[in-house]
Image (cartoon, rainbow, N blue to C red):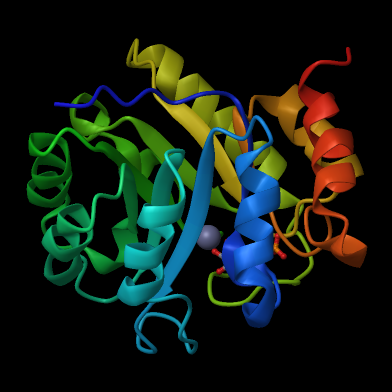
Length: 226
Ligand code: DX5
Ligand code: ZN
């Protein structure tokens, strides 16, 4: 079984780019030191949008050896997990607001050697993670309501990261915190100071002016400069 490891850094969200340029994006991004690609999968019910799809993941898998992380925004996560694992994704996070059997979902993901995550919408308190720490590898804290790229960051997310960090410590857990949505350079710096490990890079960062390499370098230096 392949060993998958989470690394601190930037994760480009491919939904945020121009659909017709995806091949070029992958060529550019594959050469950079990104740890994983963030792929938004939506069903038009949990959120009023359709993101990328299973065929996109199938084709992406052929083009990269980097980790593929799926952010599942669907009302019935259990219906999607096996299909995604069969395509060779490395990590899946699903929304706690959408799952009636989160432990079953998390176990299923881990059984195949993939990394298991829970995503929390902005109004969902981090205490929803209680009783799940033993089954989790990472948590995705949404900085915007899920569904669309390019929205304004919700500042209460800072407090939520601190509360999540505190819970992680209390549970002596080692899970990673990923923040998704509305992150720009200034916000990214503050998120790292508040305890974020992974920042999803979308419209205001990675895809700005179509300069993916330059943007990535600027953005990832946030993790190395004090
Ligand atoms: C929102 C998605 C995000 C989004 C991020 O539902 O989960 O991954 O693509 O885009 P930005 O960074 O532009 O908010
Ligand atoms: Zn996402």
